[in-house]
Length: 542
Image 1 (tube, rainbow, N blue to C red):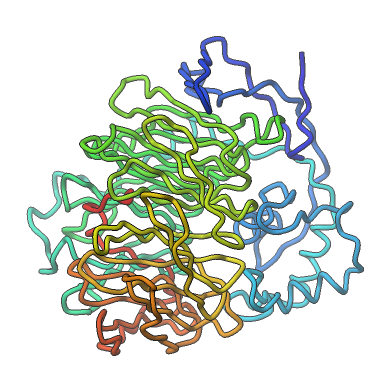
Image 2 (image 1 turned 180 degrees about the vertical axis):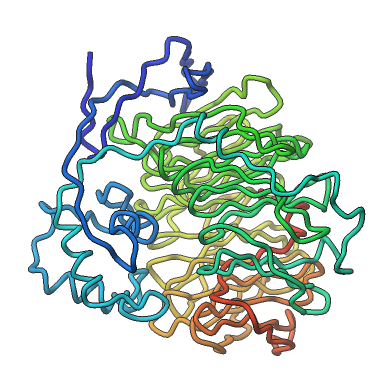
């Protein structure tokens, strides 16, 4: 029997797995996935689908094939198959306006939303490029998704430096647990700053738009980074250099590390797969297909949105994985040799970022189309609450803090200017804080009294909002330096906060209490994400 998927225009063959057992639990399934030929395992509820094809649209944008540009730059909101996600579908039958309308939106953007101006920095697309994009979204989207198999991964594994030749101590003199790793978005590089002295101490070669970072919980020497192009790097922080790399996919986002330091897990947008790696060698150990049953009951090749590690001394030796389009959360037991999966279905529509409560008992996950944060009990894998926080919640890596015996969590929103705060014990909203506009990231630190949030999609996208941890969460101040500012990150001791100025090509450092500017760090190109190495010790997930 063959089943057609109508929810996703990319359709491709998925073998029904004879060795997959599904056992129902209250709100999900327990999935024991045997390895398929080539090391792939089908996702829960997967069924065969027909293969279809359509002519490929020709053309280039910014000297790249238009399909490649769209996949890398536009698919996060509009879907890799152009069927929409948090942004609208961009398919011929859905485009009711004349070309001039779409040319204007691509060129000028939609101020106050996540839709940027592609005629402006950092994209600076020409009129011809924008016309090509309009032609592309007018074309049929029927070509099957690119493949990247276990054999491709194994062939890509590269030893860059013989680890036996590495230095036996740090060569830079900085504290390994207070380094700031900063993505240089357009230059395939990671800037490294000493978080004590606020000085740039080096740059690490990376791949395209370094995205996910994780750090070894057992050895401060090792960091790991994954670019949006699927390359995973093992990085030596003694010498600030990558020592190994492997490509796990073609368009990738999420990565996490087990608490014992032995396993990495990384997820793809394209192809729809999830990969377990040996953290020491980067050898791929298992591949799961994330093509599975979606919230509407139809087969969908779901992107992997978020992966977090659960502390075994708190709850269990688990990874929790969010499948964006499928609306599922998987819990993978990394302590078992077959890495068994427990799945919770129908969590929400278009899942995205999330974080763990400090005790790791609850996984808070943004369901962006539903405008809620789902609260999932990690032990029972049941959805215990859906907290309606506002338009398109986007917590980033999360903010949680304790004040006067109560633990709070918060999120910013990618479609409105506010922070929503809730009580993690009752899962009820206890306050909101207005911001200058839609944002992506906020952070708190246990030794700092304030929470910091960006508004990178505001009409004037250079306001950082700082508010009190104590109810009623009063506004402490706003920082308006720069051009387009985002991703506040505390130093390890909580005394300073770093903020990227994406278009200003600078990182600014502020006193976490007085909000005074204490340093400007130049020489960093298009800085975006900032990650302090002390994250390896926090319990919100790493």
